[in-house]
Every structure is written in C-alpha cells, then in structure tokens.
Image (cartoon, rainbow, N blue to C red; front, side, top):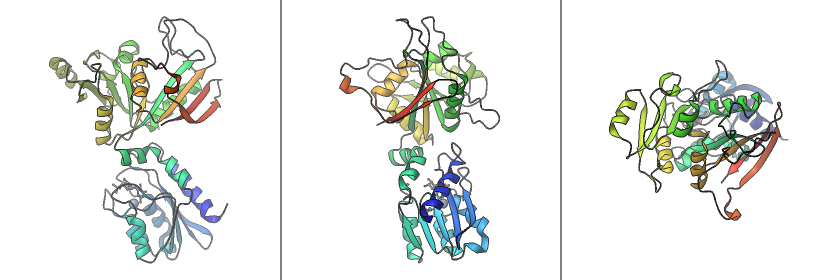
Length: 365
Ligand code: AOF
Ligand code: ZN
C-alpha cells in the first residue's frame, strides 16, 4: 500500500467515529501529514459543527504550512452552517490535497477542488473512492436522489417465520441479533413500522444501547389513523413520533393524535387506499431524514419491496423451526408469480453471530 492509500485509509477510519451522528451531513475524516509524520487529524462530529478539515487544521497549527492533507471527501466550497473548508486549507498554506472523491452535493460538486487548484494546491482525487462512496452511501442517496436510504430489517426462523401461529415473537432471535438491531436503530434517522405492528406488539421502537444510544424518529404508517391513543410510543416521550396518514383518515381522529404531540404527514391514498410510500419518503427526505429503517410488519415490508424502495437488507435468521400455516413470515402483500421477478440481493454478506444466529446482509437495487 502506498502512502496516499495508507493515510486515506486513516481518514476513512476517523470518519467512521461519527457513524450515525452527522446526519444530514456525511461522515468525513482528515489527516495532515508533514515530512512523513501525522501532524493533525480530525473528523466531522455533528451537523452544524466544524468540518473534518477544520479540526485537523486546528490540531496541526503552524505545521499545516507546506503539508499534505488527506480528506475522505472533497473539501466544501460553500457557506453552509459553517464556512468553506477549501478556503481554510488555502489560507493555512496546504501544498497538496489528496481527496477520495468529489462531493456530489450540488453546492460543492467540484468547486472545492477547482478553487484549491486555482490557488496553486496540487490536488489528487480518486484515492479509495469506492470505500469513500460506500462509507457515505446514506448521504449520497439523500443528496443525489432527494430520498432517504432505506434499510429493511427482519428477524425470523429458519422456516422464514417472524412469529409462531399464536403470534408469539419474543424472542425469535438471540440477544446478539437483537443488540445488532439496536445498533441499526442507533444509526438510522427514522424507524418505520406499520400500524398493525403497533396494535399487535405495542413496541417502543427505541434504541436500547445504554447512554450512548440515539433514538430514531418513530414513524408509523397508519392510513386511517387507527393507532391506539394509549400506545406506548404515543405516551412514553422517549422520541418524537410521526404518523403517516392518507386524506381518508377521520379529521377528529387526527386532532386527537395531534394533541398527543404527534407530527402528521398526509399523503395521497395509493390504489389500495394505503399511504403512498414514495410520497412519504420524499417528504421525510425534505425534512432531513436521510435514512430509514423498516422493521415491519409483513404488509409494510411487502409494499416496500413491491415499490422497490429498499436499498439494503439485514435478515437475522435463528436456526430454529416453528412451522404453522398461520405463522407470519417476513414479507406479505401480493408477492410475485414469476421467480424472475424476485427481489434479488446483491453483494451478499453472511455471518454467524455469537449466539448462533445467521445474518444475511445485502443490497436491493
Ligand atoms: C467538508 N468536510 O467534514 C463535511 C462536509 O452546513 P455545513 O456547513 O455543515 O455543510 C454541509 C455540507 O458540507 C454537506 O452537505 C456536505 O456537502 C459537506 N460536508 N464537507 O468539507 C466535512 N462534513
Ligand atoms: Zn467543509
């Protein structure tokens, strides 16, 4: 591995320190090197706070003059919540900038690189670009498509059941799988379930990872406003709740729900009278929800698959069998007749977790 790659890898690792904490901003890491020695490094921690380069420059101080900077994303060129990083690098006297990839944010999009070059900085791009793109797959989906990055997650038995025939589902999978599930909640901006899941399980949809965990916005897809007013998530105050309804939901019902401090999003009703999911997701993206985790139930999962809205999937499979024709499986809806129409996972990764469950992870594109 050459030096450029080595230091870029370091920048990417630094960026990951803020996984799930930078939304709607990307994760970015920066390393400043002078005479073969790291003299400053940093990463972006939270939207509205200094960018990675600013932290690295502060750490390097005077040593930044004549140094090389490695950044996992093109330094910004715009005044957002913070001033442009490319200007800070020029001012500090950086001599060479190695950048993993261009920032596809239309406010930046090559202008940071251009400005640095115009100021006489040697700029190299495309070092570990694939890794950099993957690291910020959520941000790039949101900024380029104006839609959230959608992850579906399910826990099931080896025979694909998410509950027994009597509806028992606690617990299908092991403690380790459930812990993993909480990590997914922690790094997603929102979690989405269908109203039938709320009626059946009365879940809290919070992140149980101790004091470092972050709760996602809790979104319930509830076309007619059927959510029980005494549901845990409407009363626990643990995290905000957003209800997605259609124009068909009774107005008095919506008023009662608004009194519970619930944010309402109304969409048109789709052909089945249900919430229009693409419209809902678009509206969530507009309020800076960059990532959503879909946890079920089976009907919502079926619609998400049918509408091709999912980007990534995590299936936790417990090596046990429960059987039963009436026992629910992960994905319902109409399904498909032709196997050639199946939703196909790509870049499939499998792992056997401590506790014996199998994790199957992949992309749906
Ligand atoms: C960088 N370094 O560490 C990050 C960048 O509102 P602001 O000022 O925080 O700007 C947000 C945009 O800046 C964000 O959409 C993305 O294009 C870029 N993020 N840029 O130079 C960083 N986090
Ligand atoms: Zn910046």
